[in-house]
Image (tube, rainbow, N blue to C red; front, side, top):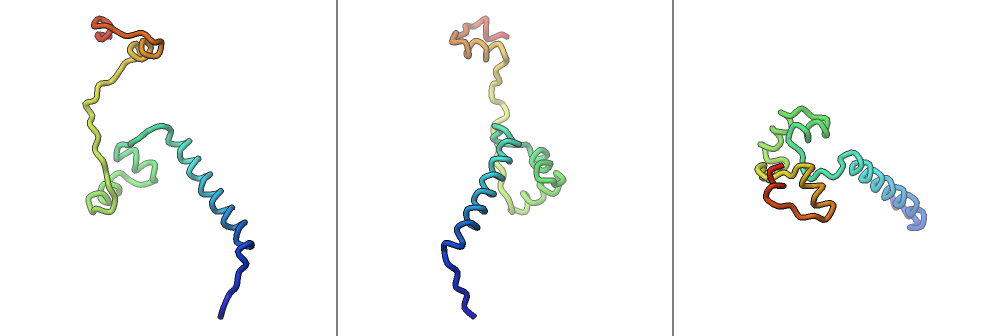
Length: 96
């Protein structure tokens, strides 16, 4: 059996598939926000899994995980406001 399909007939199917994929990606980006990483419990919840299931998959080597330093210095709102408004902050501002 041989099936012949005119490429022009496939164009709407391909276009619809690409559009649906791009919309799904956009919906995920909107739902997740600007976060770059998630803790294992958060990731499990987002994937509708139990944390132990996600951990087991990671330990089996079926998915990767990245560690990030947790001792990064955090800026409070005073630092943020000073930087946002174009001012530098001096040593007494650092104590905020």
